[in-house]
Every structure is written in structure tokens, then in C-alpha cells.
Image (cartoon, rainbow, N blue to C red; front, side):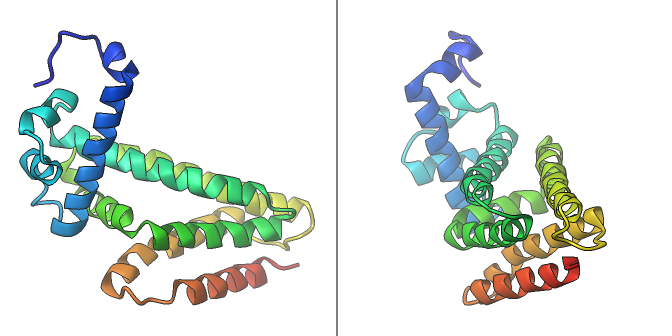
Length: 206
């Protein structure tokens, strides 16, 4: 149980404690990716970091809170990685290509984080709050893609494309990659990304 000698605001405002929480989340990601959901416990995370279980319990109320933070952390990192890359696009067509390329590049260069995330999401029913946390991010991603397809259509770059159907199907195609690279580490992400971008460009063309 976390000590109540400090307020939540004080704890969250401490650089040292924020760094410690990030370290714990990093340890959880490593354990999840290597050993899976069922083997991930506060004790296992503590062992990974070389600290006592009490250190984990001071900063997090339990496993569920740690795993929710893992989900938030990975999703936030992905957004921070992709947003500036897509924002630099000079057209909707380029934005579509950059969205796909940057998303797949993140999956490729952050495999440990992605494997940890999929472990948590695969057991979402066993972890209160996870489904809601992911759903909020997922719906925001679909809305952003829908806006991209809608914008391209209004600008005359895209033809009579169905924005929502295109957004949902593209998001599903990208989300499937996490399982593919775990099954086959040599999966050709670059080639897949090129093919996926070409497919959606042609489907969206005037």
C-alpha cells in the first residue's frame, strides 16, 4: 500500500518519484514482453529492477494500476513519435503515406513495448480500466484517420472514398502487424508498409 504521508499531487510533482514510476513501468514492459501477462507480478517487476516489492507498492496501488500505466505510456509514446512526422505532410496523400510509414516504423523500433502492450490488451478483461484506456485512444486514432480521408476528399485529392470505413480498415490492418512480427521477427515491415500505402492510395484515388 502506498504511504499517505504525502498528497497525490506532491508525489506526482516529485521529479525523483516520477522517474521511479517511469522505471517501474519500464520494468513491467520488459517482464510482460519476455514472460507474458500471467508471469507479470509486482514481485517479478521488483526482481527485474533489483528493488523490493515495497518500492513498487509505494508508487502503485497494485498490478492493475501498473498495467494501465503501461498502456498509457506506450500509446503516448506512439503518438509522440508519429504526430510530428505526419504533421509535416504537404498534402493529404503524403499524410496518408507518412501515417502508415511512421506507425510501422514505431512498431519496428519499439517491439518490446508493443509486445508488452499486446499482452496487456489480450488480458484486458482481467485488468480493470485497460479496455477503457485503450478504447479512448483507439477511437481517437480512427477519428483522426477519418478526418484525413474526409479532408482529402474535400480537397479533391481523394475520390468518392468512404472515410469511416477506410479509417477502420486501415487501423485494423496496422494493428494486425504486432501479432505478425511476434510470430515472424523477419516479417517485411517496409514492404508491407509500401504495399499498404499503395493499396489505400489507389482505393482513395479520384
